[in-house]
Length: 475
Ligand SMILES: NC(=O)C1=CN([C@@H]2O[C@H](COP(=O)(O)OP(=O)(O)OC[C@H]3O[C@@H](n4cnc5c(N)ncnc54)[C@H](O)[C@@H]3O)[C@@H](O)[C@H]2O)C=CC1
Ligand SMILES: O=C(O)[C@H]1O[C@H](OP(=O)(O)OP(=O)(O)OC[C@H]2O[C@@H](n3ccc(=O)[nH]c3=O)[C@H](O)[C@@H]2O)[C@H](O)[C@@H](O)[C@@H]1O
Image: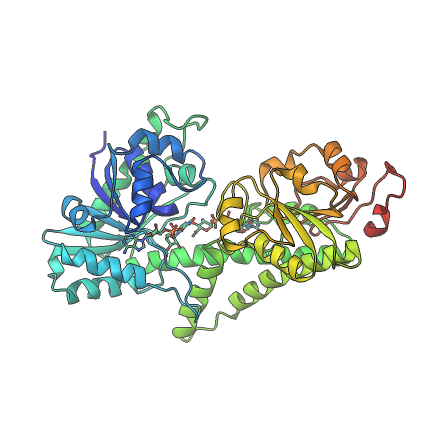
């Protein structure tokens, strides 16, 4: 059995909270710190505050035992051997990462440092941040021998965060000191030795059998670059397939066949080749911008990243044009929207392309009835209901008497919708799918006019209604 290590995690947002409960699941003792008192109280009471698979189970199991929640960073610093910084690093107005939260935490840690600690960058930060953290701590009067700063970037995805954390493709530890590297290697030992995978899983439905993940020891700077480069590369893949999907639309080819054809090349791989309405979320947009900005500051021409951003922005406009092409004019049209979150299985709406599109449609004079299985509460706070926007209680409530239905988020439950009932609920059986959730031939068979991304549009095979206007839109 690996040794239990005392860990502080600063920031109990998506990454901090998932890391805290997963470290506990691996056998460590964790103090999770946040400066938001209401968040800490909610977590102490068992409310995860975010929609994330398996998080409620793990929080319930370890809350107030192996994971304690507090606002007291000084106490956590004194008690723990490693302090993970997992606060936000949002995009600033210039495109750079705003590191003010990281700096504030580093200075606060410095004020309570009296014995050797390892300070871990878990937040996504630009190269050289470890040096800035070190300088900030030293500036606060802490001797250099009392601490090390290491980089341990996080690669989890929202929606599958817990499984990603416990079954990672790789663990990256960027450390310039052997002592610090050894502590981090010890923290991840339950995973890297495979020991964790021999225990019965506490997460129902998840098989614990896994090949132990490799742990890559690197320099701190390399680790910082690995994180930005990984996210940027994934964004490149998405923009690439989106550009290819536009080419497919122009030629009546099928992007699904094309993606399969390229993805079967083991050098390319099949993942992250799903075209859509552009990537969103709290990470890809800001991390691509930050990486581009770092390159610019270092005098390196990384214009490719600007192209990636350009394609991403144009993807939403193309989708809007597609809606217009199906409906002729937009003013006064009643549209059903399925999906508000930036992707399925999460309630996160940060930088959601779905919400951008809802705003664009409202701007065009449409009225929108929107449904999302988890993200309505958050969306309402940013985009209150009004004369042109209603939040629906389910997909059919949204679809009721609508001129067309738009799919903007890839929730699994949307893909499983009862198509006959949907057909009967819509005013006109027109579905414009920004996530390619349905098989065009099935939609055709069910009587829909169906437009998707990078695949030929189809009209109904059977005229299931008199005065069906659908075929017009598909042609
Ligand atoms: N959300 C994701 O899926 C992933 C995020 N990341 C990175 O992890 C970092 C955190 O991201 P999220 O968890 O999404 O952010 P978040 O915004 O959900 O959470 C940040 C938390 O830090 C707290 N905080 C801010 N200042 C603090 C302070 N001085 N002391 C204590 N707590 C403080 C906030 O109250 C908040 O609860 C970012 O750098 C992000 O790029 C990395 C991988 C995945
Ligand atoms: O640094 C981060 O925060 C994280 O960012 C992404 O994770 P996440 O933002 O949770 O979601 P993804 O599944 O990567 O999706 C991001 C966006 O790309 C879109 N996407 C994804 C894949 C695809 O093939 N096509 C596509 O349009 C999604 O709909 C979504 O809008 C990365 O996948 C994680 O590895 C990383 O840790």
